[in-house]
Amino acid sequence: MPALTWYTNITELYGPLLIVESVESPTYEELVTIELGDGSQRQGRVLEAHRGKAVVQVFGSTTGLDLEKTKVRFLGKTAQMSVTKQLLGRTLSGLGEVIDDGPAVIGEEERDINGSATNPFARKVPSDFIQTGISTIDVLNTLIRGQKLPIFSLSGLPHNKVAAQIARQATVVSHQQSESVSSRSSSSKSAADDFAIVFGAMGVTSAEAHYFRRELEDTGALGRSVLFLNQADDPVIERILLPRMALTTAEYLAFTHHMHVLVILTDMTNYANALREISAARKEIPGRRGYPGYMYTDLASLYERAGCVEGSDGSITQIPILTMPDDDKTHPIPDLTGYITEGQIAFARELHHKDMYPPVDVLASLSRLKVSEEKTRDDHHAMANQLFAAYAKGKEVRELAQILGEASLSVVDNQYLVFAKSFEERFICQGENENRQIFDSLQIGWELLKILPQTELKRIKPDIIAKYMK
Image (cartoon, rainbow, N blue to C red; front, side):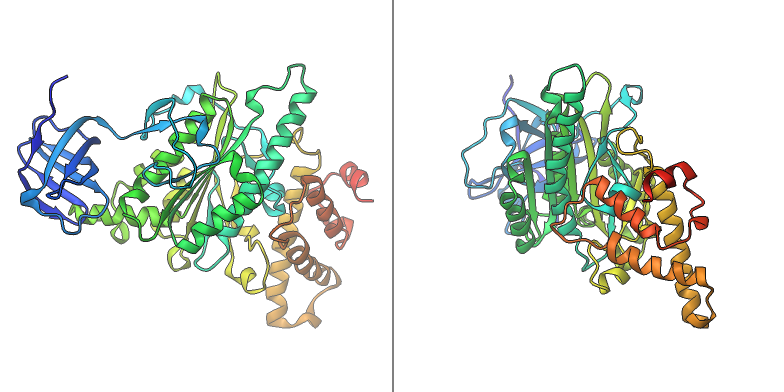
């Protein structure tokens, strides 16, 4: 292999970007080594290459970098990550480096962090149910293996608590469900029954990073998890690389070791802001609200790495979490995310102010994938439709009562008013450590529907009502 050339003709520096001239055949996404005047080295990658000119993104701080004493070497390969099953139970940085107190990890193979596109014909339709232990998700907005279902949160709301709760509860329940399904089949339990969590936190505070690590450790979920952490004071480039590192790890576990992997990414708003910062440094023409015009494609390159593939028993399920700037769901980040993903779990500030956890806005939430009732119970779909309709009617009556007064309401209207209040207090609201089984959530639903006359239960067949409303 010929010796790699060091280039010293660096002409400009913009934030984390270096402009290198007269480079022989640079390629997009190519890795580079940057040597500073004091002999220390940093890594980077090529963001743009044209006619011998390369725009290099530095992995790390560029503070104090002297252009005259700095040199760059192009490595002829793209960004890769060393993957192994030994990553389970470990904590890594946004660059894929181990940052816990454990021993070094020896990788089994190198993988391009950008992944490769999955042939749509090779995808299987997701159908298996993941139980999160949260009633508003399990009953009304079911999470399916292979689905990408984001959480649209607001600043100051407990989305980090919800993420940690889903991580620890889904780890236990989904694994138990896999064993249950396996025991009912003629085949013996295989490696496909394993369940893992890949948790990626971008731009979080030290307190938040400590919280995620402590929650996973205290509940025993860390042993089945790979935790990627990028703190707010870490280089912005790590926020661009972290989700790709996390998804590369998930793909290895899912399609090499046939595991069911749940990927939780928080906060995608910090990722998009990092993308905007890099775009501004490159002097690109901005799109909506200053975000790059290619942000849709960039987000899709992450979200579309979820799914189930023919010939593999493994799967990747994604829960991206984002905070909507200014509580605006038309902002480019939630807007584009909603186009790519299969629904959303929306949070409401009104419920948070009522001290309700988790503050899921039922009427604004949606899961476009529905679980087969064979995986849950024959009243699941009808129950979800009836609860949604009754709560919508109850909120409508509540608004009417505020205008006309409760004295103007009919008897049935008052029953809907009581239902809406009870639905929020008993169904939506549950403890941070309360892990509800799907059948417990359905039972609570039936108890709430008893508040209404049976003539109002128009979305449930009479035989189902007779079977479960006791």
